[in-house]
Every structure is written in C-alpha cells, then in structure tokens.
Image 1: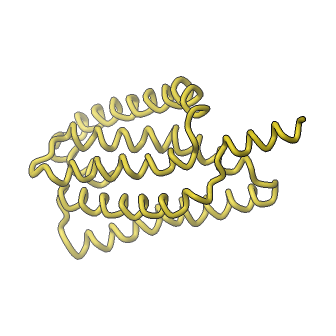
Image 2: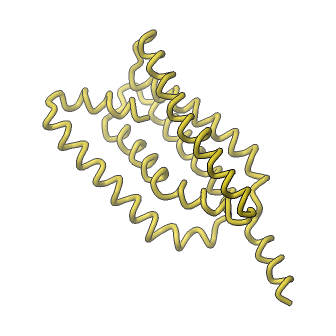
Amino acid sequence: MNVAFISKIKQAFPVDKERATWMGKFYSAANLSSGFCQFGLMPRLMPLLEPRHVWVFMPTLMSLLNLFQWANDNVSLYIVSSGFLLMKTMEYSLRGTVNEMLYVPLDFESRYVGKEVIGMFGYRLGKSGTSIFLTILGTIVECGVSELSMLSGGFALVWLYSAHRLAPFVPLRHKKERKEKGKEK
C-alpha cells in the first residue's frame, strides 16, 4: 500500500514542495488518528473485545480496502490515501495494543522469546522481504496502482487466512478471568 500511495502522490503532485506539504499533512493526520485511537478509543473498546477477534478484524478490513481500490479503474489519491491512513493508524495504535494483550497470559520466558521471535521474523524480516520482493518485481514488471492494490490485497488475504488459523490459539480473556476468580475464592 505504501508503494501505491507514493505512486499516486507523485502523479497528483509532480512538484516536490507540494508533494512534501501534502505528505506532511497526511502524516500529521496519521499521527493524530493513531493517537486518538491509542489513547481515546482503544482503552474503551479493548475491555469489550477479545484480542483474537481484533487480530482477524485487521486483515479483514485491509482485504476489503484493497479489493475496493483494485475494483476502481482510476482510483483517486483520496481513496488510496484513506486506505493507507487506516493501515498506518492500525499499525501505530491497534496492532501494538493487541500484540501486548496476546503476551499477557504467557510466562516471562515465553513472553520474552515470543516477542523477540515475532518482532524479528514476523515484522522486521517480513518488511525486509517485502521490500526486496517489490524491488525485484519493479525491475521485472511495471506496476500501477491497480496492480499494487491487487498484490497488497493478496498479501492481506494471506494475513487473513493466517489470522483465522491462529486465532483459536489465543486464549479468551473471559475464560482467564473466570479462572482467576475461582482461585480467589
């Protein structure tokens, strides 16, 4: 989505100064929306939601957004930037919150090793691998926003499939709370 976003920005604003101004406003909006979600919305919603459902919600939303972008022949900058803004907002606020909630029921060693392994292989290596893949793809084939949206949608569907497969392994909070109340008695 980042590459599609940058491609659409370059089309819309050929002058560097105008593009930089627009990008500054965009990232201001991304930081404001993620701050609002992280400090205003998430503390109120997360006690009501199970982390496993949020993990499935994120790739579902991204898959739908990418499908919408891909289905539009001449997608506008605002549609692409809205999808990218939502992705950045979820990355900055929602994903971090849910990550921490997944590790809470684990013992110290599992929590520490799990965070390191997922941080290294799942996040950093995933980003690096995607960058290498897109670089190689860009040298072989010219990709427009529609093709990039389709590719992003494909990756989002893989993410969605993985989230559905892994969700049953995430402990439910209400079962843990019942167990803890039983121990107190």
